[in-house]
Image 1: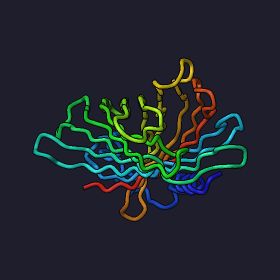
Image 2 (image 1 turned 120 degrees about the vertical axis):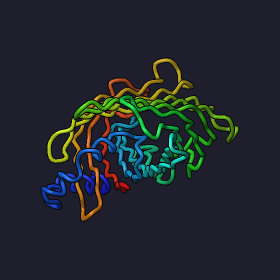
Image 3 (image 1 turned 135 degrees about the horizontal axis):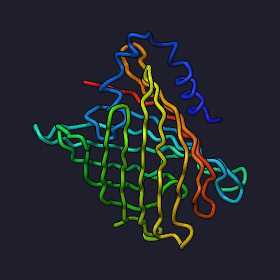
Image 4 (image 1 turned 45 degrees about the vertical axis):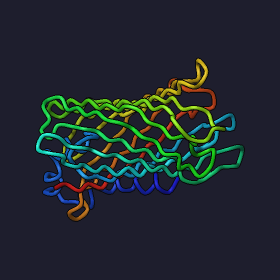
Length: 266
């Protein structure tokens, strides 16, 4: 198992020993709802490690560590701008016993959201992609842009929501193929006691440039998480496993996702 995954699993399993009951209760309530809202008015730095199994005809293993700072900006008393950057560090198998390691394409999403959301939370904006991949196996070589939308509903103890994007290439290396890529993360979370929760947050994608039958990746799975504190710093840690019930040729069979998020509430 990759070291980042192992370290984050240890964080989850040991969290009950590093905080007291009083602080666990402190960490709940409003903060519990915010960590399940990707466009919340909350500064956070997620470290998400995805390990994909069964990649390619040689059943390789791909590892991607996404560093994903989320920074909210108050534009006025009615409107916030939420920025979400994803910086991927990738180990990509390229053949039996061979791999490339480096930086993937960086993406930036910006959402306009109401400063005082109602029962249904929403945000809309743009998703931008920058061709920062350090190898042809690690990036598209294209500049991309497209619309992005988030819808969230949080009844007592639950969160239901979806993030939807589609990106098209508009510039970049002429020798590389065009990009027309759909991305959607559907998430359902049930809060338990003492900061624990169960969730399912599959990432569904479609490559519209691929041939018929090789466009969709559709995973099914679930995970477990916990909100806790180390000193005064709130941390949200979670782990989940997903099986791809639909995938393109050479796509991974399954994925282990492990994440630790540093939270900086106001």
